[in-house]
Amino acid sequence: MSALVGTVCTTPECGKPGTMACPTCIKLGLPASRYCAQACFKGDWGRHKAIHKLAKAKATASSGATTPAVRREFNGYTFSGDLRPAALSATRVVPPHIRRPDYADHPEGRSMCEEGSKRGGGSNAIPVYTASQIRGIREACRIGREVLDAAGRAVRVGATTDEIDRVTHEATVERNAYPSPLNYYNFPKSVCTSVNESICHGIPDMRELKDGDIVNVDVTAYFGGFHGDLNETFMVGKVDEESAGLVETAYRCLSAAVDMVQPGAMYRDLGARIGKIARENGCQVVKTYCGHGIGELFHTVPTVPHYPKNKAKGVMKPGHIFTIEPMINVGTWQDRTWPDNWTSVTADGQRSAQFEHTLLVTDQGCDILTARDGKTWMEWDVAAVQR
Image (tube, rainbow, N blue to C red):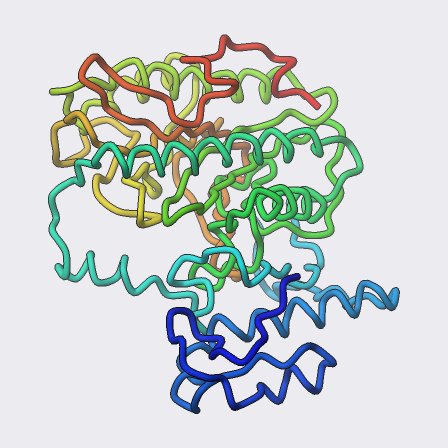
């Protein structure tokens, strides 16, 4: 960790002499970061306090001490399936030198930029990104791809989803990127892991993956001021025929929708293609959650529904960037949310699977920014999603 010390004020771009020492740095035995005045100290606190968190976490690790896991028990709650919440480990820390989105240090995890856009503070028009912005988003997506591949290698019988979170977090930080889910509206982890009947937004915990489980791993990386978002569903050990069919159907749904992406296509039409493939395979499409625009904001316009007869607005144009991420269920399309206010599960307790890519509309069609190894697409291979 590089120390922010010296005779110059620590606040970026201030440049005035630093005459005040941070008392918390001194208490923790760190080289004292210095500020020119209270105004700069208070203004930089949201960024600077991350140094203290990191120092405390490192001190705990070096002493061999561990933070007790937090138990989660939803007393009185009726679960729709067999999945149950397990204990949570401590939230992981991102080093202070890594660029952070606006919600990273907000006490409620609120993205004021996103909220301002939704209130009409920004244009409702779908962004057409410049060549420079596209390069930035492409790099965030490349990092996200590498991180998801690392997380996927951690999927195995006996592994906890907390371990997948650790791998995701470390792989993201190693690339000087920020794991976008962390503290987004107080989400406590660096990746979403959704097991069996969990549709999306599952919180990684101490539950061990079992032979026959399926688990979706949803990664988003923030780098250089841009987000890149993708996910895959992995089969753990030997799964039953119905689950294998569900996972392949989810993949086919995404693949077919991607094939439709080109200038002039209507966003609302993607849902009809996805719904047709789901129905042909005896599945249903979740309606509560949609794909979304992405770039400088984690979630923005356009809204991309995955079900038929939706009312999505907009026509695709070169320079649009968005995700497609259909959530496909064996049983009902309806969902419920656990009392943790995040974990979405199927209402009937049957299984759900999902795949996601971030896409750029080009003059000729589309570019899959989160494709593996730079490939335009990857052929379906059960071995690629079986662990």
